[in-house]
Every structure is written in C-alpha cells, then in structure tokens.
Amino acid sequence: MFNNGHRDDIDYVDKEERLTCSVGNVLKASFPIMLSLLSGNLMHLCARSLLAHFSLTAMNAAAIAQQMVSIILLPLLCFATISEVFVGQFNGAKAFRKASTPIAQIILFLLVCCCVVCPLSLRFCHVFIPDNLYSIGRPYFSLCMLMVPFQVIHSGLTSFFVGTCRASIVFYSVLIANTINITLAFCFIFGIKGIIAPMGANGAALAALTSTIISSGILLYAFLGRSNAIIYETRTLHFDFAILKKTFSLGFPFAISHMLEMSIWASLVKVLASVSVAEVTIQNICVTLLNFFVFFVDGLQKGGMALSSNCIGANQNDSISKLVRSLAKVSACVCLILAIPLLVVPDFALRSVFNIVDPATVAKAKPVFVVLWACLSCIMVSSSCFGGILNSGGDARFIILVRISVMISCVAIPAAILHSMGTFSAFKSWSLGVIQQTINGFCFYLRYRSGAWNHNLLKFVKDT
Image (tube, rainbow, N blue to C red; front, side):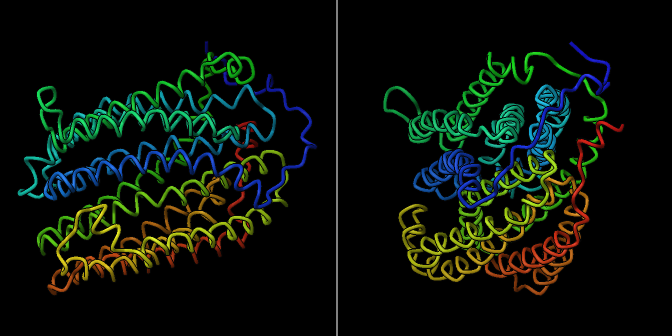
C-alpha cells in the first residue's frame, strides 16, 4: 500500500522524555551491535584461519577476492546504513509510522541495483586478483557475489533495529547463523572422508553464503512480526519520494568514497603481491585483523549514531556533547584492549591463528602490528567519536570530501611514489593509514566543534 507522500497524517507525540547519553547508555546502545559484529567478524577470522591451515595460497586468494567483493558491497551497504539516521530521528520524534519507510524503500532500491551490478562485476574480477591466485580467487569471488543481495537486506534491517534502539535481535540472529557457519566452514574446507570432498576456499564461501541467508531470514521475520507491524507498520510499504531522494543524496557520495577507498586498498594488496609472498601475506593478515577488530569501531559508531539521531529528532541537542565525551572514554578503553593481541602477544596471532611459522616473516610482521594498532586507535577517534555524530546530523558530504581528498593525497599518491622507488612494503602501507586516519579525525573534530554538521532531516522531510 502506498501513501501520497503527505506528512499531515504523522502523529508527533510529546517528546519531553529526556534521552541520556552516559557511558552506561552508550554501552547499552553499542554492546548488542558490538556482539553481533564480533560474532560475524569472528566467523570471518575463523574461516580465514582455517584456510591458512588448509593452504596459505587459498587464504591469500580468498583475502584478495574478498576485498574486491567489498568494492561492490560496501557502497551498497552505505545506502542501507545511512537510512539509520532517518529511522533514529523519526523514532526520537515518536513518529513511529514513518520509521520503517526509509528501510523498505532503500532495500527495494538496492536489490534492483544488485540485479545490475553483481552480474557485471564478474567480468572485471581479473583486474584486482593476481594471475597466480586467479584460479582459486575467481570461484570464491563468484560465490561471495551471491551473498551481496542478502547482505544488503541484512544491513537494511539492522539499521532499522539499531535506529529504534533494539539491537539485541541483530546479535541473536548473527550468533545463530555464525554458529552454523563455523561448523559448515570446517566441514566444507577440509571435507568429511567419504561424505564431503575438501573444497578449500569455495567451502568457506559456501558456508558464509548459508549463514548470511539464515541471518537475513531471521531479521526479516522479526521486522514483519506482529509488534513491529502494529507500532511501525512494517507490513505496509509507505512510498515517500522525499525520503528516498534525501537518502540517495546522502548515501551516494558516501558510497562513492567507500568504493574509491576500497579500490585503493585492494590495489595496494596487488602491488604487495608483486613485491613478495611474505609482504602480501602480512598485508592480508593485517587486513583480516583490521576487519575483525573493527567491530569495536562500528559498534560504537552505530550506537553513537543511533543515540545522536534520536537526540536530534527529539530536539535535545544539548545531550550530544555528553555523548561525545562518553564515546571518547569507551574508545580509550578499547584502544588499551586492542594493545594486548597486537602489541603484547603478537606471536599467538601469527603462529597459532594464521599458521605463520617462518621466523623471518614473524619478525617482519611484528613492527607492522604496531602501526596497525596505531591505525585502529586513530580510526576509533575519527569514526567512533566524531564520524557517527556527523552522520547522525546528515553531514555525509563533508565526511566524503575529507575521506576522498585525504585518501588520495596521503595514501594513493605516496604509495605510488614508494612503489616506483621500489621501497613499498606492508609497514609503509599501514603507516600511510595512520597518517590518513589522524588527519580524518582532526578534520571531523573541527567540523563537530563548528556545529555546522547538525541538520534536522525530519524538518527537511516535513517541509519538502
């Protein structure tokens, strides 16, 4: 059922209830998201570890193919994620009947995009996958592309539950799906004698595809459930062109920046593959660890964005400064936690998790772990403390401008120069990442202090 786009029928109820942004509430909003992301990231880490014990060649091929999938996937997920801002602001304003509108519209739009983008992408995977890894990387890439539509659905529904401050269902769905995934990954990668032949990288992708379908199905069932259908009218599609247009205008530059950033990092991996096997292996290990530990960053960012969006929708902007301080305190604690595996006991990750037994490779990887930790710490500041806040105010264009300009000037160009000089390495790659994230954080902080980031998108929708 489609409505006519008018906002006269929206019931905005009393919003006198104060939203608190203490450390406890930040953890309450972020912790279920962190747990769900941890579950998913742990699944990827375990699958990558299983592949490393199966074959380092299979792990490298899967890692590079996965980065190429991310070039296509992340831009689509940006659209789904940005809809969380609308959901949060509508939920904060108690306009519950409009909260599901952005989610339904953006999911339908992205599924149409998948029908075009996914088949075309299969023709260009040879651009980023090195020739010596192509025979393994190509089928892995194809299976992972089948996951993209389901990941889009999962991300969109996650934005709805996070924006309405009910992220626990996301954690349970991911936990169930990934428990199945780990079991299937072990069976499919190594095989079961007389029953399942060893499938290596293809087995890891097939297990991940199964878990993604299960997790998406659980969230869709909850989204269409009776309570959500009554409160948020999730079973009725309200077409609102103004919301779709605004979501697209915010999400498109965000998506382009992610595509450019992932393309540059994927190119760096291919460059390092031409340097040496040790360099590309270390780079892939660091990317895997970054993707694993980023659950802290994404959890805090999404939790902070949900709280900030609700504050803006409820016209309680004075609470946001306290939210930033709470996010900073939690981020500092996370940085200390990350120092343990990366700085204190790096041998465990290298030898036990990734099966790196060559002493020279281990010795070369340890300094890279130091700059990886520094890069993660800078990401915590730039994304968790300020990036989510700026996004909640609809200031995506500023974020994009900063990220693209800094990525090109501080990573792409210096990396090209170093490669032409024959001195590029994994250590220098992550050192450039530290510089990039430091500048990002400084720019985001200045933007936050200026106050120019705060846009009430609810007013835009009502006034359109």
